Length: 349
Length: 267
Image (cartoon, rainbow over all chains, first blue to last red; front, side, top):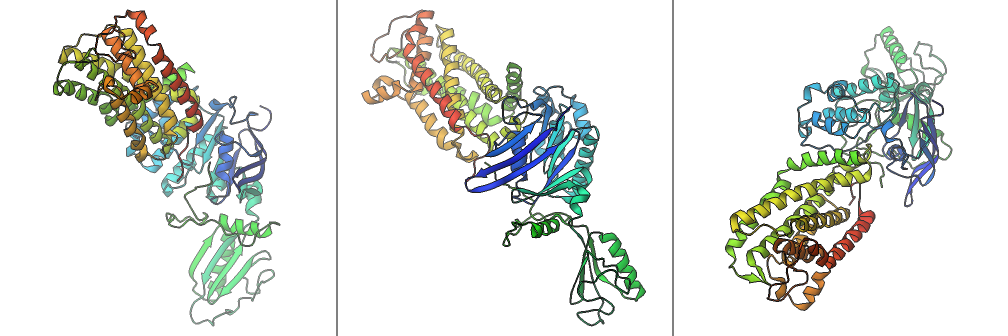
């Protein structure tokens, strides 16, 4: 097949005065898994809903298989949609739901195969209203992939799921992608994009601030190693730790590299680095060599939010008063690499 | 297109029978009213029709108003608010098949409802079977289609599931009041008869009476028996009714095009 599966060029979508998507361009090739990353309100859902045909762009073009996705010629049979939120008929069982969908899905898999694919064979007879969130998500995916589509849209497929369900959904998406399905994914979870996507685009305030392969994008951000020095050491500058921004490894062997940043607040030390694991190892070695016991050791991969803040700082038209959209009362599910706010209520029609 | 509509019809049909409130409203209430009301009202005749027939006519109009309008408004509002319509729209189903499947379901249940009421009228009240069954079926199906189109339009203006009663209740009161169920049309004041002649409720009731008794009840208000009409003639004398129903169908479809919402209303 020639040409990209998805082509987006200069896409804008306004809601009154609010610009939800502000000049976005990207392509997704056949068989590629492409992730749109961003906080709530970044414009991910608006972008994906334009590609799904639910919304029309205010400006610019969006093409799916070379067609206008909101037009009559949109190749619905080649597209599978997992919406961020959507309802099912609570009074139907999983098998009945799939059977009903088969009647209007071209080239549909048999019911048993569709349920087997997502690991719902054991719940075939369970009514949807008695299913857990994770089981419903699997059913969403079973319905979206029922007709073996060439292109699968996944809008935050794992938001709101517990860790085990998130893992199963990711495994499933990886298997589908391995079979050659083109996937456009939006997510808050950096590790999800990292695990699944070949290429990512990070959106912030309606724009793509960076896109490329995962390692290209992550190279811009940093991980974080934090620890507390033991009592007995003087506050402030601990013995043997270099002050301010060190250049190169410190004389004591603390590998704070040129591009890493060390901040010391009281006994708390925070090192921002692109390679948190190796820095953590070195810090432990450094401490052991001095007979120090470190407490509160915290090693994290870069969070999406940190990557964002970093990117925002380097964006020419960065507005200083911008803060990411924190949703209060967010379910506490704690993955390190996740941005605040799980209830992806992006602006909709 | 047809295959998609039939596919959605099978789905909505299954769901209808699994919704006890919808089944009760469509089949149990008409049987309850139709079974009891003629026993509570003194006999005699209204505008040349036996009172029991007038009452059963009213029960038929109420039945299709409940099924065609109330059930569908509820169904569309609920499925929109639960984001089920949004999901269905993302499938291969064309928009028209989504409406078509739902409407075929109420039409098919409407035929069953009609058969139940006619059977009850015969068995419980000894009312002779309709003289013009074809006219009865056509009137009832067209009536359901008009009410269903109104339901599609109005559902777009109903903000949330709990709010459907605000439109359903007035609709049901109009159906009860203007069909001659509660009060004889002949006793309406002149202005109300004029208003009613432009609304579907009384027109459907005229078609039902004409079909039941084989006499021209279209616009008939006097005490005497109207003239006998044959099967085809029955369709002909109903022309003002067809006109009013067609006008409402077109109006409702235009309003539906403008008002219908696929995704939840906010605020």
